[in-house]
Image (cartoon, rainbow, N blue to C red; front, side):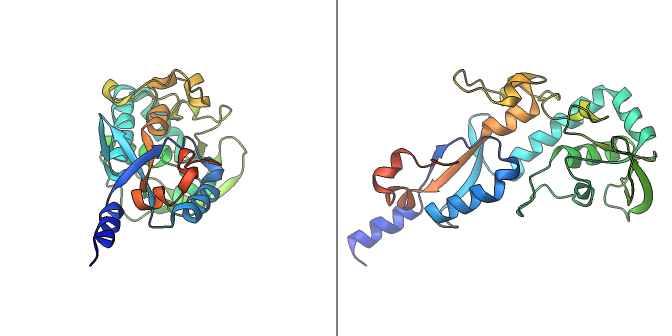
Length: 237
């Protein structure tokens, strides 16, 4: 093994943060394709800065869920509304009700708030969250459409509530309106102004925490291979 090969192997084990990608939404798949082409599928990854430390997805999403746990625990009037009015909730598409895993590698936009709400409501009502689902006819409170869907554990109503949009009946669960449970999680970015800085709780919200803590890490050998383009590693994101 040559000295140069040893150096290359060492650099392949070094990862560096190259930027904050921000909100992806429906742009999720395009971004992944761009980064795969630029760094290789094994040359980049998402990491999260939580209380000054770089952590993995599981550790970061646990803080996201905990914020909903604390918020709903303090606002039982919201829990009562959910339990008595709804049979399930979703983010921006009805099919979201079938997902109970935060890790969502496919092209569909990530949706975490509806999963957090379902898990926390199950806890607060003392119902096992992973029990066998019971199908029910649920009426979308916004569109009036009836869907045959699983009733979420702890929910007793016949409604189906969308969370994301300001016109949705359950908008009060939007992560831009739910504050983080620990102030140590939040930071400010004076030169950056995204939609989640202007809505709800601003930079104190769960949404702001998630978008600001998310960074892209790149293998150092793939980074240096960019040559002069290393000055703009996230161009096009």
